[in-house]
Amino acid sequence: MQELKERILREGKNLGGGILKVDGFINHQVDPALMDACGRRFAELFADVGATKILTAEISGIAPAVMTALHMGLPVVYARKSKPITMPDQVFLTLAPSHTKGRTVELIVSPEYLGPEQRVLIIDDFLASGQTIMGLVRLASAAGASLVGIGALIEKRFEGGRDLLAPLGVPIKALAVISDMRDDKILFED
Amino acid sequence: MQELKERILREGKNLGGGILKVDGFINHQVDPALMDACGRRFAELFADVGATKILTAEISGIAPAVMTALHMGLPVVYARKSKPITMPDQVFLTLAPSHTKGRTVELIVSPEYLGPEQRVLIIDDFLASGQTIMGLVRLASAAGASLVGIGALIEKRFEGGRDLLAPLGVPIKALAVISDMRDDKILFED
Image (cartoon, rainbow over all chains, first blue to last red; front, side, top):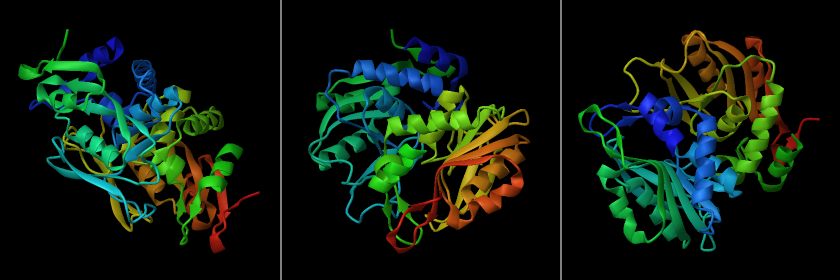
């Protein structure tokens, strides 16, 4: 998506070590009009997969997932990283190593909101190593739900996440695909 | 807002001890159309305060704040509860006791996105004891920004947050005001 790529080039910062800072419009400050446009684009890309629920992970996945859900007319569930007191004792829980956090995080979903009848579209901010998204895939699988697609705002192709997720056999779409971040560059594919 | 009150009565659960479970449409699963309607309502209520930025706290404030920001054409900043590696060393940080978490949480905002020229509208999911919102007020104040309004989806009037915030002298609006949750009830004001 041209608008997102231009914004990354204009305001994104390559902090080295594969870390892309997009805190000015996605990860700390959010540009709601940009997220709305991204949500509309995901809704087009996944119009035909028959999704009944969108799944994301707190925290940074929430804004793009909610906007996508709005345009698709679907509910969105965000996996929690700690279990709130309002959640039942029996939950779906998986562990996912977090590259940017340097530790393993829990991803927790209540069985109240994810079940065998659901067709799940996963939306997140980044597709990098794919570990967080694979954690969400395991949660959907544990709930007996069907996975129908995976969307990310930004893919860091060089971190291999797409290779990890490809065997799942569902469409994987990213709105901006970065092929190289060496030497302070931010290079997009094609 | 009638639509929100009806949803609370239909799907909200009074878990006792003043805890209202709204995990089916706000706090774990999100109804994006309802959040969109709430955002539109906040945009009407705060149309005249001259806000230039919306401030909220992760995690549950993000969906209503982003929708409000969309309808007001403003950026939204969500205070982080832990400092990501993309944030500069020097930050605005305050501590806020969390009723539902049973501990004190950090609220952190980067000075990159909050400064003296900003007119800040705070939007959050709950106004209960007011401690989280007061934490956000302190962050805005530390940045030298002006506070112009406070909005919450749901106010638990009996927890006293409005009394804590009233001396700030800005408009405080809640879309559903609960006056009483004793004996498994959920009673709205008026």
